[in-house]
Amino acid sequence: MLENADPSLINDDIRPAKPSERHWSVINMASLWVGMVVCVPTYMLAGGLIDSGMSWKEAVLTVMLGNVIVLAPMILNGHPGTKYGIPFPVLARASFGIHGAHIPSLLRALVACGWFGIQTWVGGSAIYALAGTLFEVGGDPLPFLGINLAQTVCFLLFWAVQLWIIHRGVETIRVFETYAAPFLIIMGIALLVWAYVQADGFGPMLEKPSEFGPGGEKEGQFLSVFFPSLTAMVGFWATLSLNIPDFTRYAKSQRDQILGQAIGLPTTMTLFAFIGVAVTSATPAIFGETIWDPTVLLGKIGEVSSGVGATVSVLISLFALSVATLSTNIAANVVSPANAMINLNPAKITFRLGGYITAGLGLVMFPWKLLESSEGYIFTWLIGYSALLGPIGGILIVDYFLVRKRHFHLGQLFRKDGMYWYAGGFNWIAVIALIVAVIPNMPGFLHAAGAVEEVAPIWDQIYTYAWFVGFLLAGAIYFIAMRATGRGVEDAREGAKGDVGVVRAYAEEEE
Image (cartoon, rainbow, N blue to C red; front, side, top):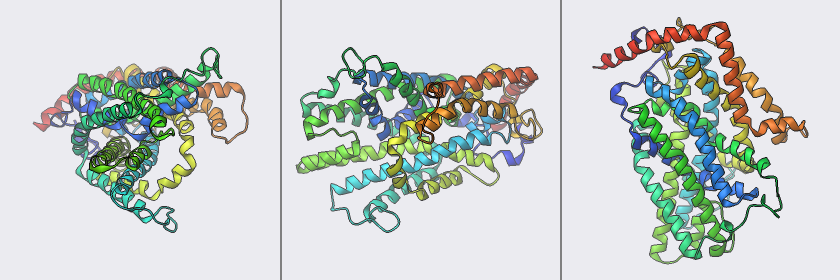
């Protein structure tokens, strides 16, 4: 049982969730995804695909297909979270080793910290735009910061609200997401209806044919754009496909986590991508220019509207944008790095402290400066990071389903003298499989990022499928090596002996 757990490997935040804590239903899981999906990057996602030559139907279908694909690792990685009540860093101990688990968990946390700062800046910008509808805001940029006083205050205000939610804990996130989800869906549909009425239809963008069809400027080149775009769509949520156990550990059952994710992720992504395309398509008829950024759009609405009703509608819309950014940021970019930091030193770091560290990093990175240089780099970055996350996902899923046959020895995940200690706390098979699976994508990534001028065409082609290549290659190497060393069969038997008894004993222990 867990009374033999090493104190340096466990605390109240990363111990297995008790039965009384596992009350997230289908609605809660679906609401979590609605809250994370409805955000500025999702709204603008299909726009990049249309700019590349796709019709709106091709763009929206690409978004939908990418999210149907990434739903599979979401559900598969969510399974051990629900079965054992363990978060992502503890799950990674089984395949990477007690100490080796720091590698995937910190890599996942790294991108989350970056996104936390960026989303906080987006949320602060929404508050700044909201303030602009009520007061005169502006002024000269402050020395060193490069933004004016009002922008700084709005950024810090949005940051402080998130800090309060972090202080309240994971349960507050569940409650917040549940109430935010229906509000965000209603506001998205309301924006769609407004655009349709104001423009007397959705405009020329939805009538624009694909440039890849007969007679188009890019006739016959569809696949060369489609596959990199599909990989980018998968990469968009590749981060969450790793740390989804951080949430499914609280699900009532496998049915709740599976149905909740299936209802919440692909459907909402597809709907919101369409809303972004349709509303943007109407903006030339309304404002005389194409406006992809919803923050800018809401500011424009305030400029051309008049009267109390118009002001109220703008305020509600900007409030909705703030809530959308808040719900995405807290769930997607706080929980994972917080748990990764806890895993480094459970005896000293709690969820609150891990969340505070994440918020602190997001504050000091000056995200507005980051966006100035990398906003157009986002799709290259998404594909590039998926080249790293794909192998980790492949190793985790193969380890749990094929190597261990869905059996962990729960107690030994929290001990340094058990089966998951491997060699000095590292399973070098997993580490080597990760490195080898990343290597084929490196030349293509360096080329796409502009670090090298030219590589052989084969490397660009491989990079097109970065997530898929990494996922399959790492999974195959890991499975073959674990079987060849005999660890797979031995660990599966040992886990089967230990898991049911320990899970039952832990449940009884609470009673």
